[in-house]
Length: 271
Image 1 (cartoon, helix red, strand yellow):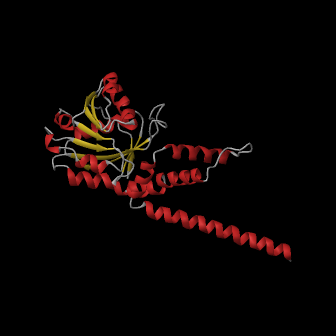
Image 2: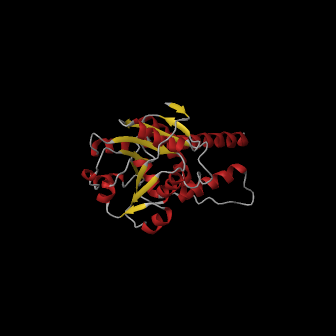
Image 3: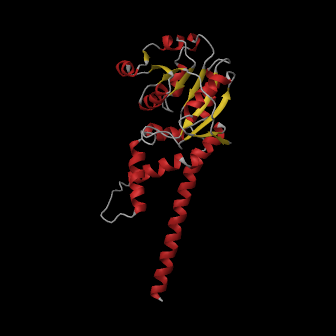
């Protein structure tokens, strides 16, 4: 794993976004600001929004793939990636293209793209560790993880990575496996605890401590994310299952310690 901040100059890219939902729109704004030209395609019709933003929207995926695009960014959900890629008429591509995924799991898209894409297609697996809420005031200091899975055109790949480096992101290069191991211990556990607090329906009280205020914020943030994202972190990260078991065991251990202390105290009271 390496952490770096690149100062390499970037060329203007023709970027196509597959899946123009909230996250795709979020990335597009910064890409446009930097002078890149964009196209988009999505299951929903975003033609009016794209027209306002200066983005060419393609309702037909074949026409999208046939356009002169340097980079195709897959902004689908974790759960729908396989279906979306499997339904794309890859033969419509006019030339070798860099495919980039931005999912919160990494081994799954890596394996899928290696399996489904032609040999001449480059693959860059990435995870911007932020979104429209955390990145609303800029990306400086926010983490961008990437893995150059299969890269032949270094110039285009470097120019795409530079989009994030030039915004001041903390650039972390690591393998997809390393990412999923770390994410299971951090992102997945964060979502799990937030969802658990949501099931407990915790709410602010008149005597909240600062720590409890943070827990309420965590609950609200995690419950505000789609359940598809949360379940995708579990279903498609092979390390998440062990971390869920670790959390269960830890909670049981804490409970046992409390019960043991309670029994000790009650025993001392009787004596």
